[in-house]
Length: 422
Image 1 (cartoon, rainbow, N blue to C red):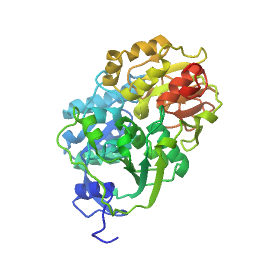
Image 2 (cartoon, one colour):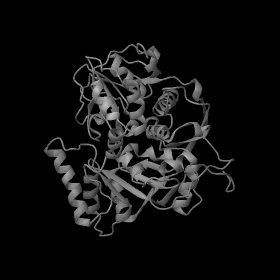
Image 3 (cartoon, rainbow, N blue to C red):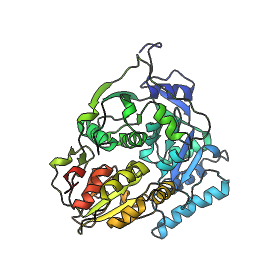
Image 4 (tube, rainbow, N blue to C red):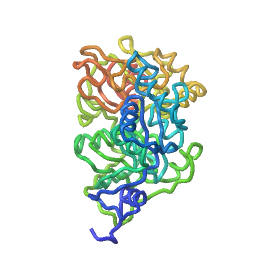
């Protein structure tokens, strides 16, 4: 590739942060804007940092968010959380979000203004790629790498090749980002984007930012390193009350080079469901014939206020099926508060849902929503591997908020249109 060839968004951000002419395939050492750890990955990172024998700590760049086992479910998770708290106090770290002021880490990174266009963000959690929804290059790392970033403020990156995804048209009612990303992963497979970035083009203005975040969140389920949307008026409006500091949007050059081009007409997309045990096992919901025991609405994929509004509009005035447990888990305290203020909480309570404070709990099979042997759950989360939410013989079906809500009422996986009298 010649030096005057255009660049993708990933190449531009990594060039800027490394001070080099970064091109796909190269390895660069880049300054990270933020490094995030949670209660599961943080303690390992703290121990590794201790082995480095340095007192250098990039405190302002560190974000520490307990979310996986909160509130603590047992002694082991309480000890983990305490290790994070102790590290925060010992080093007087400014960006720590205690239970009650917090939420699921990826929601917090956006809500608290750390994620922004043009930034390079790493997190010791695979779904850190979420912030690509607002034009950041963000990606998951290991706890050891997090420790290195704590001490140096930098990490090495292999500059990824980029898959160009061209969108046209508009979503139909009750179709959204989750359906799009399940369709993409189904088309290319769980390894179809290994160590590559997705970059979205075309009628992106028809994709709400909450949907973009859901799409970018699941880039990793195709092996992706990042899933990056352009910055537009919707982006700026979405982050304007939250963002910390200045930011510089990044757009791809016209003559950027892509390893593959995918095209999707949003108006032709249908509500999708990913059958067990892979996110790539997507099918149209209308073809599903699956009775469920549990419906789960929440997670870093679909626990935002927009998701809650969609679900509430569907369950309003209806009752959860007698054979189903409907769990509603907002992704942050802010979302929880908004649900109260907008009357959504009342709608969910009236329909017979269980509502919890923000936690990752059930998504990773941690607690609060674990499935027994043979049970089936439709879930707005991002993974449905064997045993992901409980017993190895349980089954997780991934879908968007509209399908989760409709299924909670019907007792089987359906679209809102399939509900009687809808």
